[in-house]
Length: 182
Image (cartoon, rainbow, N blue to C red):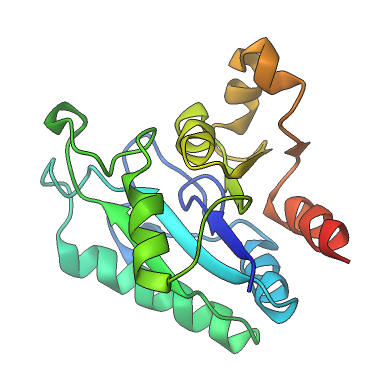
């Protein structure tokens, strides 16, 4: 099965500069959960890779993050899809860990856990950090304009501007990915 890796905040759900701290604050972007279900139904293995420094900052607890993750998995399941795993970096940016994007540690964890290579996998994100993490593992980066995507698009280096496909949202990126695999 081909792998698709998706960032969470700003791609699947609305982002907040104050962090998404609870299930009550977690709101999916219209069409995003359906897009994940469509990818799954098209035969892709879908994994989520997300930086969650709010844990290290003490803004929310692991139980809060798990509640959000469980809800997201259940909602996608109700739509006939599957999320193979949600991988997160709990560290503060100053911790210099290997799992915080733009470093590729989360993608390595996905490969190890799911037994799939990320090489050639699509990685969908809204930030330069997402795209850089994907490139470090030979993924095909895809930028969406939701979340921080518009700002990221303006700041993309010239070499990425010419090679990274850009879409309005996860649903449009999904149409592209499924079309490419047909």
